[in-house]
Image 1 (cartoon, helix red, strand yellow):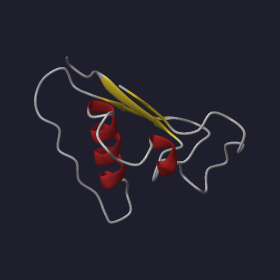
Image 2: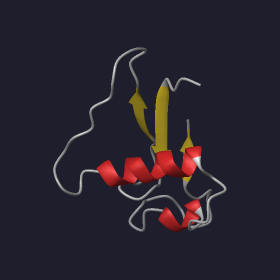
Image 3: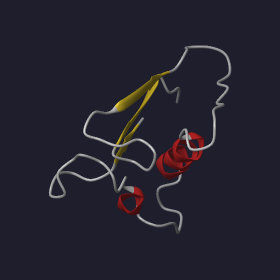
Length: 81
């Protein structure tokens, strides 16, 4: 499996309603860096949830961004690969 993009919507450091899309280069390594609070850990948790959905972890919905502008009755956190 080769990931070509990562899309996060209403997930921890990535508030909705618009998705955040990370296009990935077809070759090479990915270096992730940034200041505190920029979303590095949020992206790592999203990837962990995606690749290990059956591990005993909190449900992905528990990671929803509390400050998102998305309506409360809409679809909650989504992680797509």
